[in-house]
Length: 442
Image (cartoon, rainbow, N blue to C red):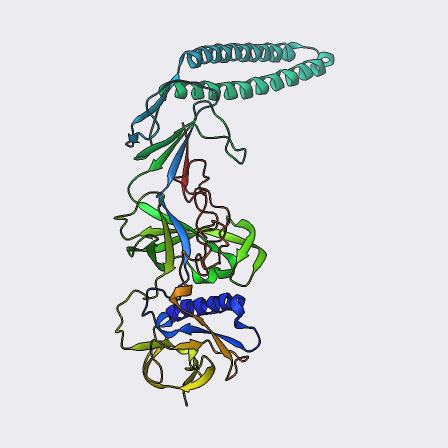
């Protein structure tokens, strides 16, 4: 039934697209290709999201702000292994700082010893003092005890400073914590587009790819962690499979842009959430490659072209006298009786043995439909991901991204593509804490 839920959501979303194309205009009804609905053609009703191939993650190396780098051992784009030297700190200043801290610590310890001796002398004098002088000695001892506690506290702090400096001298060489490729070295510091300080060094981890995309709040129900997906190339028929391992609901991004759905421009505002796909195999994929992501409900399974497996939600009165709203030879809407065969509970489909062919067009059941309405057809020719270019904006097609282009401003991607933004492999991109990026203090 999970597969049915995905298909049902896809159909509902498709109807919203068709509504913008005049499906709800008086006297008209939008009808869809049976071939397309049943998955017999190259296009299907799957929710489609744009995505990008990214590295499995990236690690940022932060420099100790109190230290100076003596030498950098790597270059941008250089491959590194875990444990390889990245850069070396200049120890000359650290040694001077350590010597100074050690001298200050020794001086504090000497002052503490002197205070303790002063306390012992006061206690001896108090024991032999007259009753009238006892109060004076008690006040002096109270002050000395306070001084001793203060010096012990300062000695503890200075001791930690010494330990930190000693550790810095032992760890003068910073090594790579992962296998990867050096993406960036910011020797002179700087900030990103958001004003955040840049890390000293960034390493893109190797060892396979994953896919990053965005899901809009309006179609968030189509995806969940653990959902199997199909990854499709944008340039050929090659596909890959994987599983959604993370949807980052904690990092919503606001999206405001003009949206084109075939019925005019409409300014919308919504939130989008990044999600990640672990691949069964990444053979043939390239870092930064743009792809499509679809929930896998079996749309690629081989189906006998002579067998129509129609989703149950298109069929009226399925338990008595089944029929569908179909386009007749004159392009008008009519009620057409069906003869049904086997029911597939997993896919929620019926085999249609008579009354319908792959070349027919049918409408999604709606109480506003009436016999005689003029049919507006929707088929694979209108489901061309490249046919929706508007003003040079690639990918503003009806189903691309399933959220109709609500994918926001994509860093390193076509902004109208419905795809993912802030990709780890793209320079200046911001990775998600705990998802893409690991921060290491050097």
